Image (spheres, rainbow, N blue to C red):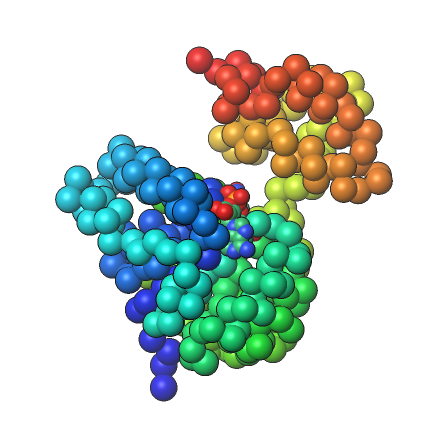
Length: 284
Ligand code: NAD
C-alpha cells in the first residue's frame, strides 16, 4: 500500500524549521511545529509573520488570505508527545550538533507512532550518523532544504542502505507536492549534490584571491563571462554570508590559511556579506 503523508511535524523552528513548516502548511498540509521553550515559540511566531509578508512580496499567488491562513494554521507546542502523536512525517531541523540530534531521535522514536517517517534536514551530518538512534532506520532518511525554501527550492533526498525504498519514494513525492524540486541522491554523500559542487568551487575562488593571483572582482567577472553563470564565487559568498564558509575552512587543516585570509581582510572588519551591507562588494 502506498504511504500517505498528510500530517507533518517540524522539530525546531529556527531559520530553516520555520521555513519548512510555513512552506508545508502553505501547500495544504496539517502542520505542527515543536520547539524547546516558550521563548523559542515566541520567536517562531515572529518568523511566521515575517514569512507571510515575504511570500506576499515574492511568491506568485500568495494572497493575504492564503498567507494568513497558513500562518494561523501552524500548530505550535513545546510538548513533543503531542506534537508527533498524529504525524505521518517528522522533519527535524534542530541545531547541527550530533548529540542534540541523537537525543532528539531517541525520545522521538519512543513517542511517535510506528508508521511515522523521520527526515533530517542536517547539512553536514550523514543519516548513518543518526539512524541507530531513531529506533526505525528503515523509515529514516535525509531531506535537505536550502535556505529561502520558497525560491531556492531544491530538496535533496538521501537515505542510508537501510532506508525502505517506499519511504524514499514517499518523501520524494512529498517534496514535490510542497513545491520543491526533489533531488534524488542515490547513496550517502557528505554535502549532498549541492555542497559537493559549491564548497570546492567557492574555495577555489578564495584560493585565487588569497594567493593574490586575481582580485575577487576579476575572479567573478571571469566566471560570469566565460560560463554564462549569473554570479561568481564572491557574489555567492556575499549572499551566503562569510561566517559559515569561514567555519568550513577552519575545520580542515589544509584550508586554515584561507580561513585566516577571510578573517583578517573581511570578517574582522565587519564585512560579512549582503546582510551587513558589505562583503566583497558594497550593498545599499
Ligand atoms: P537554528 O539555530 O536557526 O534553529 C534551531 C532551532 O532548534 C531553534 O529554534 C532552537 O530553539 C531549536 N532547538 C534547540 N534544541 C532543540 C531540541 N533539543 N529539540 C528541538 N528543537 C531544538 O538552526 P537552523 O539554521 O534552522 O538549522 C537547523 C538545521 O537545518 C541544522 O541541521 C542545519 O544544518 C540545517 N540547515 C540549515 C540551513 C541554513 O541555511 N541555516 C540550510 C539547510 C539546512
